Length: 223
Image (cartoon, rainbow, N blue to C red; front, top):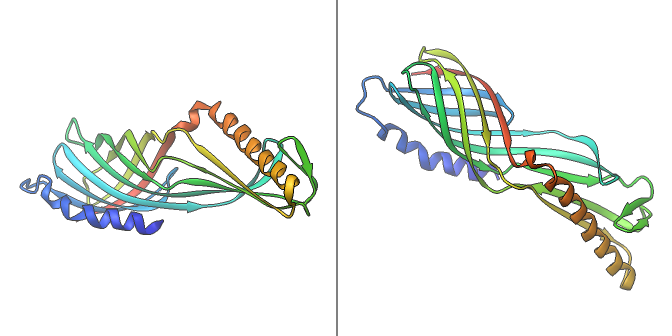
């Protein structure tokens, strides 16, 4: 998926100098950021006193244990996204209001822990009967972003942004493999589908999961 981010950045980068290129105050910057979107880099262009544009990419992956619908999973949040953001500096200084888009390949990957009997849907299965039970939680691929922050115009500047990505309803997918055959396999597949729906219903009950809060710190060098 990282190739999608690279392709977008390469496609948009030539447009940066065209935005307000006549301004004597134009400033190009390169930044590194650590945020709730991941660890990444950013190319910025302060086209004028009141206007700037930023293109960035972020990546982060880690794993933790969690229980979903009474099933133990090894969950791996996978953050992979790009940003295209327009900054408006109402006072011409470091403070800005921001709006733009997230190119969103963030997802959660789940692998069930099969060390003991496991209840799927309405039935209980042994680890031998369940070959694997894997799932994912995904979001829409493009999401609006709104935020605010501070970005100085000195050659080396500290960055701070606070915002939210409107990533929409998370979608759950659950895939189970089994050695069972015939009617037993059909019942297993039906129970996996029921487990998926129960997990989806649980997530749908938390409306806050439709938004990705963004808190970002960075360091920028301008040229």
